[in-house]
Length: 167
Image (cartoon, rainbow, N blue to C red):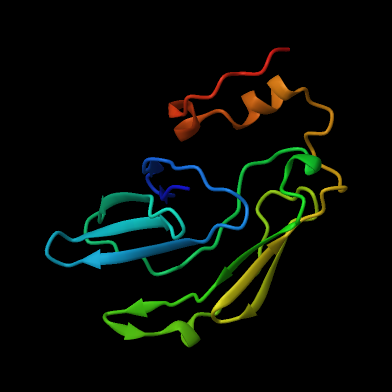
């Protein structure tokens, strides 16, 4: 579990410290604007352990977040994803200028990298599920563990203490 800030133009990426999470644990995340510093406080907490990961992201020339995203990423073989084939985001609350605008958000289900039949399900304005098929087809099925590592091990991932699998 961690927080990530990705900026498309000019491209920039930052991540907070990471903490382990086990199946069934609950994450609580928030993005809160701090007017006094013109920045955002990004926080993620494992509810069951109290582990908190945090970063502060200064606004770029006063730019404000206007589009929320719910993302599940990293491309693997289908059998390597969790066997329950679902991750749920619920009790989503969106505020703008101190006002609840949750029902104003128009979520759109999109897939950037088709893999393993990943599908976003917009249940309602406060609940989104992402599902996959562990028996599906992955564009990485033909690669070795070492090649999959190389495929995903770039950018922020290079700061993780992960050993490359043997060929």
